[in-house]
Length: 565
Image (cartoon, rainbow, N blue to C red):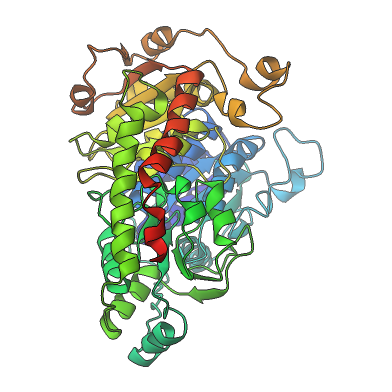
């Protein structure tokens, strides 16, 4: 049997085992050396194949798919610089424990270190931003199928583990590359089955934690970025301990109707909020002020299923490694509920004042700034997912996006907080098609990734792309040391006069320019890709952000003493 036969047999075996490990989505870029892998995926009846010519965008589409489905997604690319184009998406996946399986085709060993065409050193290419890597030898009759399946299964297990994330399987192929299909009926039983048993607290352990750690009356629960906590659970824990809640937008605990225990506009409360203890779930926060504030608290308890350090200001005093939902369940089940205290009652009153102050600050005049629009969007009655671009949109969402009715999930790429691949990630999320996905993007973020719009021409998913056209990178106008520079516009803001309507026409998108005649509720009910341009001005945004602070200060000036009464 020839080389092409064994290339095809090996590729079908790899895809077969990935399917057996419950992976369904395969994102493929064109390439010759990867053709055996691509054909094996396309020919497998259980594989859902997505294709895109740009590996960089493809990587972020896979990232979005993995985020929304909460399962590994496979990326197949050819040899050479194709790998380098995946690096931003792999870094983001690594930083956020998002499982990806990167399948790369490579030249055989004899072509390395020889200046052979399209040949680079691909072994361990993504280190240190990878959870597992393995290089398969060129396929031949001497490589047992059981070995191939076992390695694939092990890699998927690591990708799915509590310290999981992206894995890399590098596959070397000699020519000729492809053969007609070999396996008439794929075998879908996994080579190795894995089971991770959750750690639980005994009644004695739960009581000891309450007695020695959670003993304080004045505490606050904070939840950073996570997708594993049920928001109903976190509300129950708040009631059980009598502690208020600070919720990062990526905690995905804001998607239930706002509760009286949730401190909105919390950034402007932190200096006055001085609990004895903070109980932290989830990883990073959007707001830099949160980490600085945690460093002022005597006791900071961090509960997380993974072992990665997540402590930028070195504030954590107690670390418990276990599933957060299980921890909450066990604490509620085994420990007595704390009676309402003056502190909890007063925090509830402060939460109400804080919530009211947002609307008063943003809607006293007819200005539609970015932050005011985001507040309005949070009041929509439509159920939708939201992808939030970096720079100013994610910061404004953090400040004011507290839905008054049940919502979908919130997503963002905050692992390394780049503006690359934001459209592609939103597309990956929208591919689930269960509801409209809204993407909130700055203009620089949009232009950085607008070639990903090509994917929508053949995959018209329900996606509302909202672009704030504000004249470039306005976040730099908030930065001390930059905002007053003479060179600011050329080096940082980089404004442009590009035409969004022409872009919409080029990629066959429905286009709208936001004004009083545009009904957002109507757009949210559609099932097609839409581009909505909103012209905004930095001065209006600055005015509203400052009002958030001053309005809250005015409304609370006689009430802050309640916290310590």
